[in-house]
Image (cartoon, rainbow, N blue to C red; front, side, top):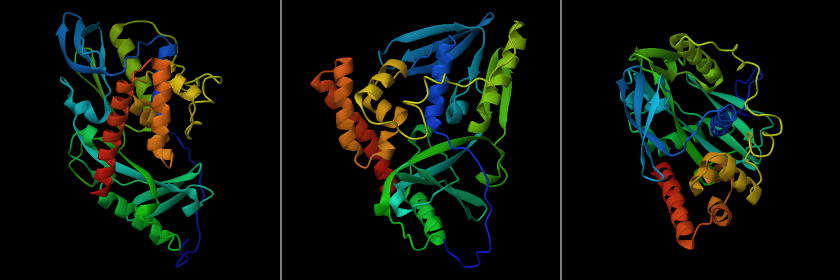
Length: 341
């Protein structure tokens, strides 16, 4: 650490999570409790008919249109919430990015908090890697197009090198990057960091709930509050909420394929993602299930092995394998180019 004017430090305890795994484990828990979970199904519109909502959906994998009838509807679509028809949500999107480097380049034993103006950044040990971030800047583009920009990388590297001058991290040290969006409730005053992270639950139309804002640390509370409102609306009986005490996964479900670190890259893990976590494409596993794309030094080589296992398990042809690899490479190359631009 830079010792100039250093007079002391504060140690406190926090928690580490993997946001993608948290989403998937929540879905697995929902399925275990009777929910129907559908991947690659897009919501187009809904209309009120009597006491029901008729929802128009599109199965993007098969191209088939679906109509689902529901007594209630919850719009919990994060940064896309204000784009959903009938939504009354107004958001101010804030972009945050992370970079990953080898832990040998920045061998911190524990997470370190860095102050940068009014912001704080974290240096977080992640197995053989270290995660560094995050930024907090306004974002006005399409949520699905969010990407890491060169200015973001420069900002993070500068903050780290200022505190650890002997490390001298450079662009060449970066193993991977990613960007995400905070769907903050719109507030025209102040910078993104000043905007409240509180969540908002509104019912702008009969039996329609908009849920927006909030953080990972409050998502189960948000879910509990929404369900309570739906139960009151429907006038039905329900057992007391168990979300505060019930783990998402049973002890025998969690250890092998779900954690803050990516699992070992093997065929058993690939089979699990295909059979139990609704994976359809190579990118589903490399990016959204395992995290191997962000952790492995040569993710393209890992992807070649993973697609071979997927082909064996799912019966893909050579053409399908090539298509999957090409799609994965195009997606990750676009993100890489955005970071380098």
